[in-house]
Length: 146
Image 1 (cartoon, helix red, strand yellow):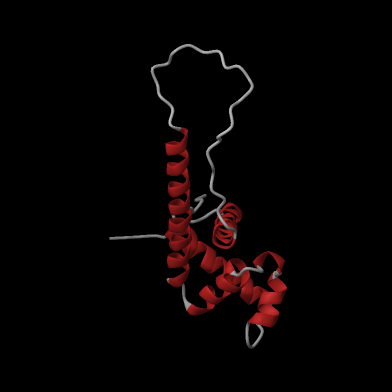
Image 2: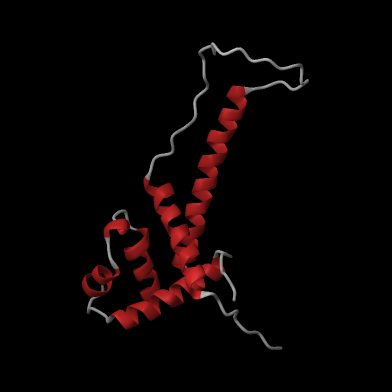
């Protein structure tokens, strides 16, 4: 029995993982704005024939509000689950650089020089980050293979 890990397209995989982590921050730290039903009449005439389909604006809005919140919650939980499974150094790097509230204002230099104690080199930081991205991409099923 022979099993080999897939060779990933490094740049595309990194973009996908960083995109998912950016979505995580948006979903986690921004409040979900619920849709509301329109209660005012429209002054625009609407010409159409009978379609034999009834419209339930309030019902579809309620379904959207509940489904969207649940989808965001499950997405955040899945990202957190995948990050918790990483080794300590990789988890620390991902949490500090990509999952904190102020992650968009941090640079890689700030993380490897100020957050790690003792500070680590840029090369070591890049190796740890790629290992973390590789594992996250496989865990989240977003890996881009060559």
